Image (cartoon, rainbow, N blue to C red; front, side, top):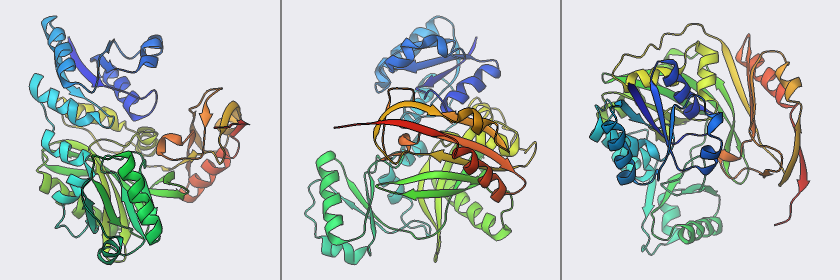
Length: 408
């Protein structure tokens, strides 16, 4: 029985769609999870053939479960995860129990923002950065002399915009450093120069050391207490020089990490001095990304990624090319959700191909402090990117969260 083990999944988004893709490809799907809610809602995960309750933070415990499966005669083709921080753990287990077509060492570095910065420190696309160790005695004055204000202050383990703060002045810089030191007393804090400019996301697949750009996606950032990406536009008309520069950065990264096969996405910003790498993640983006790529190009990126992970050649040839924009909906107030209205109207709006609303009645919702606080999205197409964006925004305006006030 050809099988794939998945370590952790979200209820929706790329990670869940990857399991569905594996089932479609004819694999026996096994999910390792420590999420009690998923175990309670087992019947909702029809594409998961076997769900195993295990401590997903323990390589030893998962290794024991894998050994039991092998003793039962299950033919494990690969062990994967589409969720931070399990991508590297899955790759280590794959090294031990089956043929791994990924590079565990590259994944390990990419999962740690500080290690990534150090590894690529000599590259022109790496912004200025400083690492502050837990015991370092620091002078904010000298820090500001080294990296001009405004300065990004963040935890190297940050995911989904959590613990990424923008200090515009000396007092704010001191406050944010102290805040993260209190929260993570044994961890490094990173300071980085703030890059002005348009930001985009590059989804990529590496096959036999050749990097392939799957999609270039323009990002719309909402700046509140955190940087939250609330809009994604798939770019179909990319100037040749623009694409060549991004390909050069991607090729440089693949060469530096010596990646044979893999999936990744880059967040990258165009500054006055050229492209600057904001971060790398060794997996497809989560959330609506797979559906966006499918709407724009007609193929499932998670399905092609799974082919890559089992040693097959992915087919990244577009079946069609459409202008696609995705609008994420956030809340401007904190409270308990009583109901959501407008989903039906949004679904019937021009160009809309998908509407997703995450929270259920009784959920506490709030203004965003991380990407996890985006509560719905609309994916829409149009005859141009501008029209797709208008269609998505028009449909999003139909969605209304009815919130009851909340006291801490």
